[in-house]
Every structure is written in C-alpha cells, then in structure tokens.
Image (tube, rainbow, N blue to C red; front, side, top):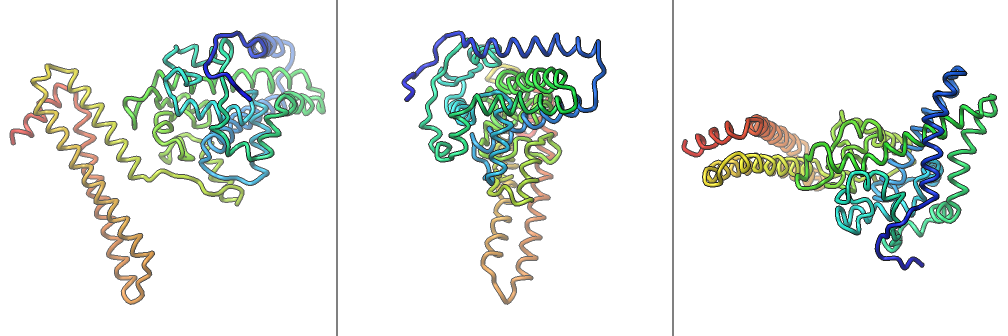
Length: 391
C-alpha cells in the first residue's frame, strides 16, 4: 500500500544510470560502429520498427487505450501494446496511466507529476531522475481489474528487458548482428523515443499554439506531433482528453489515430470515442474570440476598447448562432431517421438533408468572414470594429 502523498526530491539512481548508459551508448557507440562497419538493412529496419512499435505502444496503447480509455480492444491488441509499451522502458501501464491521470486532474499544480510550472527541464526529464512521486492507484481501479495489466505491473522488469532488449538483440544475433542491434534498436531507439515522449511534457507545455483552450499551458506543436506519432496536438488533447484522436483534422499527422482506426476496421478495437465536431468548432471559436480579445485589450487604453470589444462579442455571437443552427439541422435529421416515418419518410429526409447542407453553407460563410476579421492587426481590427459599431 502506497502511503506517500507528496513528491519528494530524491535522486532515482536506477533511472539516472539507465538514461546515462543508453544515451552514452547511442551517442558514442553508434558513430563508432558506423566508422568501422556498414549499416545493414536489418539494422535500419529493426531500428525503425522498434521506434514505431514502442512509440505507438505508448501513444495508442498506454496513453489512448489504458490511461484515457478512448476505445476498447481485444486481448491480442492489449497484449501487443503492453509488450511494446514495456519495451519503451517508461514504467508499467498501470503506473504510467495513474500518473498521467494525475497530470490531467491536477495539471500545473504541485500534484501534477510533471508540472511545467516547475521548469522546462523538470517537466522534460528531471521529474523522473531527481524526484520520487506517489502513485494514487485509486484513480486506476478499472485497470486493476485487468489480469494482463496487473501481470505486467508485477513483473515489469521481466517484460521490459525481454521486450526492449533481449528480443531485438536476439533478432540481430540470428543474423550475426547482435552488437548493432543493441546499439541501434536498443540504445539509439530508447534515446530517441524517450526524448520524443518527454517533449510532450516540456515542449508542448511551453511552446506552440493554444487553439481550443487559450489559457491552458498545453499547446499544439507540429514538430512534436511528427516525432511522437500524433501526440503533439496537446492543446486539443487537454481540452478533449477522451477523444481517440489527437490530430482531429483529416490532414493532421496522427499515425496513432490511423492505427486505432485500422484495427477497429479489422474488428480488434471498438467503441472509439469521438468529440462532436460542433463541440470542437465551438471550442475553436471560443479560443479565437478570447485570443482576439486579449490582443485588442493589450493594444491600447481600456477606454478605447469598450465598443470594439462589444462589436467583437456581437460578431462572435453571430457565427456561433450559425453553428447552432447547423447542429440543430443535424439533430432534426437524426431524429427523423430514428422515427422511421413510413409514408413520407424519404421526402422528409431529403428536405431535412437539404436543410443540413444549407445550414452548413451559412456557417462556413460566416466562419470565413470571422476568420478574415480576426486576422487583422489589433489596431486595424479596432478601427474596423468601431466602424461596424457606428454603422
């Protein structure tokens, strides 16, 4: 039973030594190997496979399946995520998920295990090396009901060493390349995946764009999304943590989302949770409105901003109203379909579908006008809004 209630400053020697050894082996051993030997196709393939498998073992597995339960998966998928998640050497799924749930619940406070308020390097790696944190497993009672998760937690060392070191080295050894497998598929891969993952706690809580929640420290950062298989859309994730997607737009780079969707089509995952597009658009509009208000307020004396801010609020309300009309049209259509009206159902459904198209068109036009408006420099925007108020 864990009795610790607060994080305490303490060097975690096991973590420190492990990070140091694998990092030095990657930074010194890999260049040495390349200077003396050719890099084989097996070396490259094994490295890339383990980067992807362990990276998405954390993102699609530990994070989206276990920590946030954004979807459900069968036993094979759960085992694979536990296996390759352990190979990432980022704690057991139970401990990882428990701490991550604390991060969301107590974000930016003393009870946040990797609070950015304690500094960039603390959030990046210091919290793992120089601090001991409590585990409040009462926030993970659902995970404790899973025998496979509990087995991985109880024998985590065996899982991690087997999956993350022995397996890639043995594969390399079968082809006479055990050393290169250890240097590249183990040490270099661990160093890369570690710091890519750590960037979510550090970079994404300090740099980037706050699209949906302007006041949150969590930001969307495209480069972090690129190296973490889609986890860099962190502002969206903190606003909508139970969505199985992090990159919500179709063109957002989010391989973890694509993987989850693929295994769902194969019947191995189901109950994928998605946030309504209307709630997403509503949050985006609210974020844009608040950001623009901040820009206006900071651009001049408050006495000059009363009417522009009132006009901005009016413009925001207008575009939100068109969004509400679009949502109502969709809701009416769905109610009609569920009602299964026999006599004129097809005619009614066609008319309702046309209302959806029209409402969507009106919203898109209103949003385009809104988007053009908020792109202006604050001083220009103030004059535009003053003119609109006087008209």
